[in-house]
Length: 155
Image 1 (cartoon, rainbow, N blue to C red):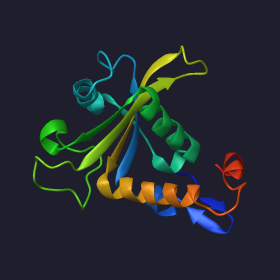
Image 2: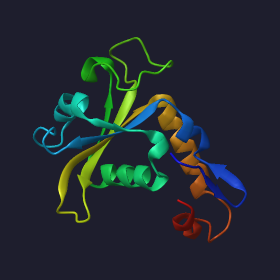
Image 3: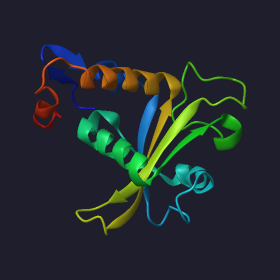
Image 4: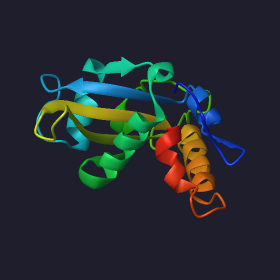
């Protein structure tokens, strides 16, 4: 991501944004096969376009996460379920039956929700997911009633 968030003298998402244990992918409508499901997501991952994390803004990541909870899918998978990871990690488990990544999948739309461009898929290794979660938790617990109101201005 282009920069971390600084709020009330604290820095958030700096370790996450520089982590190599997650990736942001776009799957075009043509490459997205069928309805959004674990099987279909796995089938189309190799056809996805990886968006370099240094070119992303935090709001794009947050929006994709939010949409995956709202109308997409959250898919924890093991190597036996999903095959080789897009972004291999030094912390990757070697047992093919243990979950070593989580996919957050949401619809990729244009200016209108009706513009169905495909899917956004974010692949998180467990270390990156924990790093993201710890920063998110710290951010929402920042002291001060107006701290989250400032978030729109800094993201």
